[in-house]
Image (tube, rainbow, N blue to C red):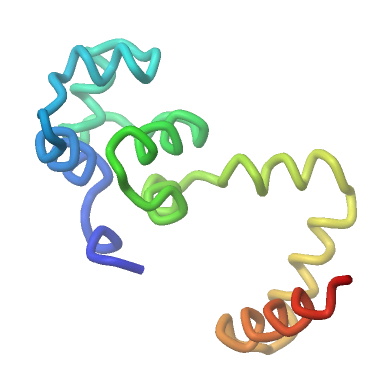
Length: 120
């Protein structure tokens, strides 16, 4: 996880919005996201929770932030994972088995890398 992991979601969004060149106004950014400027203001001041994952992913895209890190910081489930849950009823069981396997996240990652390499 990068430097955003120990920060508040709203602070990260506000700083990134003001840090792009040229900086995005709150209203312009809200317009690009399809949300109300008042709601975005509450998000940036940490008075309201983060929007849905698809909006968080769009924020990351516009601001040049890592999508996965921002979604995690927002405490949302990535849309790709949500879609996988909807498409295949075996996905939740796979995750339960993986989490209960006793393997560390690094070991699971290595396992996945090795098995992806075996794909034809």
